[in-house]
Image (cartoon, rainbow, N blue to C red; front, side, top):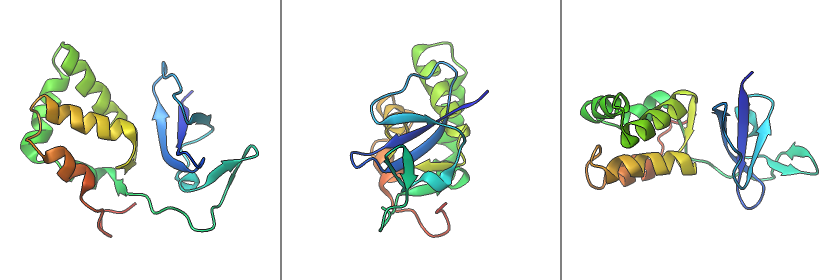
Amino acid sequence: MSKYIATLNNDNVVFSIQQALDDFVLGSGQMFIDALDNELLGKRYEDGQFKTVAEPERLPLIRLGFFMLRLTQAERIAIRRLAKQDTANGEIALDFMKLLESQTVINLQQPQVRQGIEFLESIGELGEGRASEILDTPVTDEERA
């Protein structure tokens, strides 16, 4: 049975929904939910319920395919090669790619997404400055989920 997680900001507003790996341990501001329900994004968790916020926060949500297109072909190939290596960096890359592939919508503010892309830049799989370019370029209407 799949596990799903909602990540909440400091105002208890959901800013990320994802499928969890079997051994996932909840972090601060995270909770298990019943389904991969993107309708919860932007809702506040209050009194045991998800409630619509008067003016929902506009999250930088991008469809997975468009997120992957923000990487160059050479970067995608290099990351996939790294993910096949039996090394610590290879395991991290594989875990990150599986995390991405488990989602249909990527929240560019999600800590795991930012950490994964920044890690790939730090080990040279992405060029200098590419993490910021990939994560901080505004989501276009065509890319938006």
